[in-house]
Image (cartoon, rainbow, N blue to C red; front, side):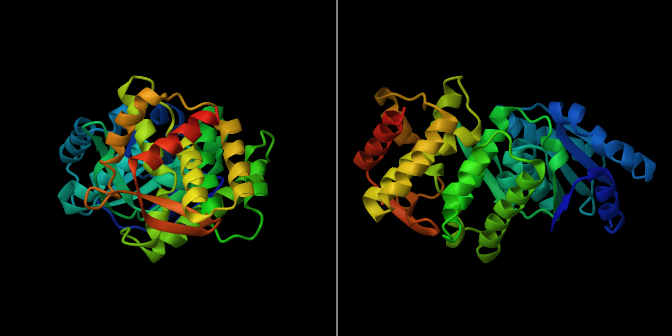
Length: 351
């Protein structure tokens, strides 16, 4: 269940009182432990609800097997049972690895996501995809495990850095491209890009964005069909993200997805007839928001190699989601290396 609130502490207490569990664990990273946990800790204390904190290091490079083992150790040391409850308070790293810890500990315990970044609210926290990175590959090991509840609280966005805000907006733009075309997608994207958008309006757009993903996930929970559409921008984007991480110059996930969408919108026009005017509008806006993608032609072979490891692939074919139009995804599109090189050229030329 998605619970929207502006007062996270009392809302969480009300929900926990309706649940049956023997022990409560709260997973944070070192940032959210300091900045976000106090927003709920006082309410839990006043309600007499005890919990055991579990803290991990922040950053995508810590979404690892070693960190997962530390969470398992904390659950074991805290005597967690199959009737215990894990609360994941943080961004995408916390919700991804926390969800996987919940999925794998004693073959599955319940968990609640409280995303604290815009990206986590509109993407990572919803849908039940849980994972860790492995051998330099994004989300290579994981499981489908749906959270019991997801809390959306705009209070966490008040001090969000611009870069983190933009990272989440990229996924919101993706959802607008996947939503049934009512003629407002680009105008809404321009609205999202405005620095002065009101908190109330942003809350409305977040709720609408999450609804797009939730509807798709409900129709295809384990990604055998329609849910693959949510990977738009990610075939190229994940490869860029992995490459830059391996080079010690990591970028936020949403930036890589934005650059991936530029390339995949180009391929959508060439391969599927995505309207040229719309392609130019969206790619221009994405470039204005996310700047130049730091790749060169010398990276193409490495990026192609990373794409060959993508989880969407079948029989060694690189498969991608393209768009015939706004709201009309084309699944399982097989890409050849020359097409990928063209898309990478287009991304670089947009610079």
